[in-house]
Length: 383
Image 1 (tube, rainbow, N blue to C red):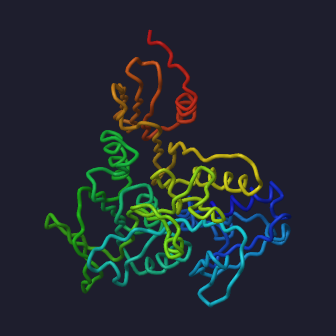
Image 2 (image 1 turned 90 degrees about the vertical axis):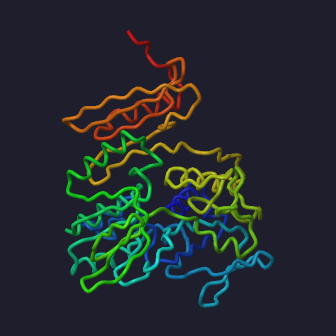
Image 3 (image 1 turned 60 degrees about the vertical axis):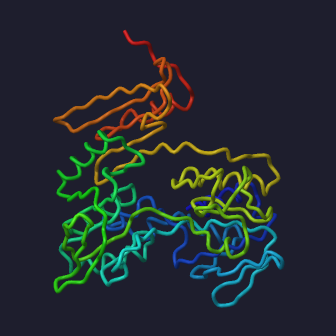
């Protein structure tokens, strides 16, 4: 997604007339919308998820090489090498390799019936196995895990979500917001199991069983790992580019790596110790990289990580300092029990500035609140 946004920005700046642009993709599909992947099980086709408009590549003279994995970067010779041994010369190189799913190192994680949730091919494999299944378990209760849970539910499976942390969406939601989300998801018939450390996945006569550290277990027909992502930085690492201590390709404010002829954008990039796992910051990086190539002054200075989405049909939003960690911050909460709506705002110690918030069940005020926060608009005085 981020790589294609970069191409569109290159075209907008006429860089396709200045450079011969060649795009390598490891998958058999051109760029597609990963944010709405679960809709694939709701009837959306691979074509409708595509981000490529018509004959974009032919029209702009951009060469697209699909199903071609780059396995080596030779920085001295300025060439990239594919798995089949083919070499292509470059003057400037942009890495938009994204991320890969983290699979917990649990015994049995490669058994038949275990899957990751990342690509359209992954989804095809999940759908094929689901045809002969009754129950599916997702390991991971964050954004991606709940998205995967929605996918299994759309396939008609009895769905369970297993999370190591005490709460769902622990990064984005406070305790009360997570509790409300859990209540709404359980009301939809999805089993939620938190504070669960999976110690083993084992084959049984009927399918698979997950065993937990607390002695409990959960039978299932299939397991989908969706327990977070890791930056896809192996290519950069093997070529000697600077890599963060916990992974990620180090970039500066121009999105240039430790080699000024190589850029990195999106989830593979590490800026000031941070990986940005949302698409909007990746798009910002893409615009900065294109601007830099065009000789313009444009900087990536971080990104707002606010997010609003529908998880299993439930509106969820989180913005700014949702956990109220700013010194002296005050929080105001509102709960509508019967309608299962939870709202919280976090404000500065003097009640003048909005710092963040959480919305579950009704996110209609999200856009207004985020604008108030980002623009530092003073909060109205209480009557």
